[in-house]
Amino acid sequence: MGTSALWRGSLATRLRIATGLILFAYAFFHFVNIGLGLISPVWMAAFQDARQVITRSLPGSILLYGALLIHAGLALTGLARRRSLRMRQAEAIQLGLGLLIPLQLIAHLVHTRYAHEVYGVQDEMSYLIILMWPNISIWQQSGLLLVVWIHGCIGLHFWLRLTSWWRAWVPWMIGMAVLVPAFALAGLLTEGRRMFAIFTDDAQRPGYMEAFNWPDTETFVALFAVKDRGLALFWGLLALAAAIHLGRKLMRRRNAVRIRYVDGPEIVSERGLTLLQMSRSHGVPHTALCGGKGRCTTCRVVIEEGADLLHPPLEVELRSLRAVGAPPNTRLACQIRPTDPATVFRVFRPEGGRSRAHASQGQERQLAVLFLDMRGFTARTTGQLPYDVVFLLNRFFDAIVPSVVGAGGTVDKYLGDGFLAVFEARDAQTSARAGIEAARSIGAALHVFNRTLAAEGTPPVRIGMGLHLGNLVLGEIGAAGHAPRTIIGDTVNAASRLEAETKALGVELLISHAVLEAAGVETDGLELREFTLRGVPQPVSALAVTAAATLSLGQPSGEQRSD
Image 1: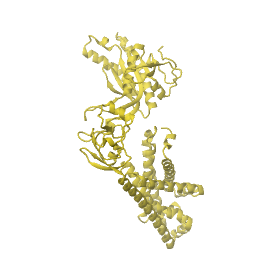
Image 2: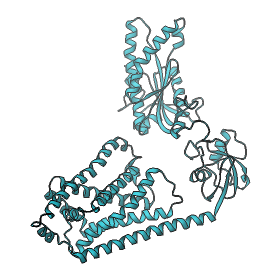
Image 3: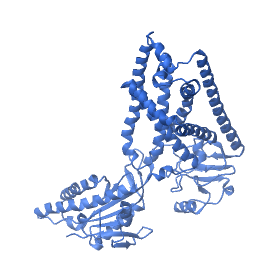
Image 4: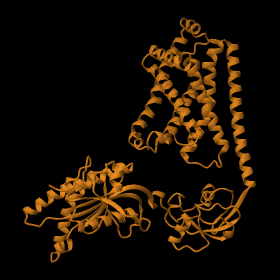
């Protein structure tokens, strides 16, 4: 995913991301500032002065406090507009932490910026630390530090997790996520002990209190009153958001539809949702391997009552139902939006028998696959003893399979004298490049292997390979507990058919245009051939490579041929 893709979404989503990044950056430098107390109080004070040149300027104040208000406002608005409070655990934790932040942040803002602007308090970091040190406030503010940081880290992860580079950086980011608050806490404790020692010295305390313009009793009373009003305002806004949420929920229930599941519960859900969404929002188990995208039929239901009141199926649903020969009253739960009462029977029940994770049942990816077959295997091994055949195959695989593994691929299954390999990677480009590199490396390894066979007086081995890229489903196929992980899909069939075409052409490899395009190879000057493959709905264009060892990813030109 590119940088521009990170900013896609509604205006509210983009605002939430932008304001969150501003607040996260402020928190990061604030924590570093506190951590410098571990090294030197002079460094701590100097860093704070440098920060405040920005944060207490007019543009900086507008940016910072505007981001704070907008981010908090979007959070409360989002809470009020949620259809359901059901959410993933990580999302619930982030929301809960976000709601905890104002409980301590309001007090922090009152005793820093507000006290400085209204009462002239010199709110240096040392002043804030000693102000809190003798009581529970120091632990409350330390808790605030951790809450803010964890909330921000979860939000950052949610934002970046779909990028191609984030997974590789996660271990480093985890280390940073632990280091920053630990550094800040160490600085807090070090400076707290230093300032406590100073304030217990009757000779030094008055000078520091004068330098800080320490608030008198009346000032503290006024500050606590402002803090209480701020907390009351926050609780009021939170109550308003909760009231709006409940009001919207009650209104939706008045405009709800009743669904009864055969051998299951009866639910009342709001109109406008798909049946699959209704099932999930009410905790009703409902199989949907493709995630509710209409790419499979595992969520299908038989409508026992109310089928005539449903909207007619669209072409995508009709095509899927025809493919499995479904009866007329069968529909896909991910495609229908009931507006009237209905009784439905779930064809596939997720409970009953051993449960499987979604990823084990099927995960769709766009990857490159390589189909390889040894030429003339039957004629070569006719009359040989079975052990000699096994010995030859194992030597052959020992010679070439490391080329697949070395390029980042895995052998999905062995097929007698050949195999099917898949190149799982973070994106299609990386997978395609890995497949091309594996094909080239296999050609080179085969060349070395055939030299060994020649020295033994054995005829050389010839191979054919088909390399293709497209959508695959990876999952466990077989009885629960005895199901190996494998891949299926039209892409596998196309790769197999391409491999078969290499025999008639007398070449070692056919690379589909889809692989070359995904890998970023310029194809304008290449002699691509178009193949009509049995069982493949659309013609496939591919590059013929006579000797795979001569394949060059950088600048392939014309048909690749050996020297």
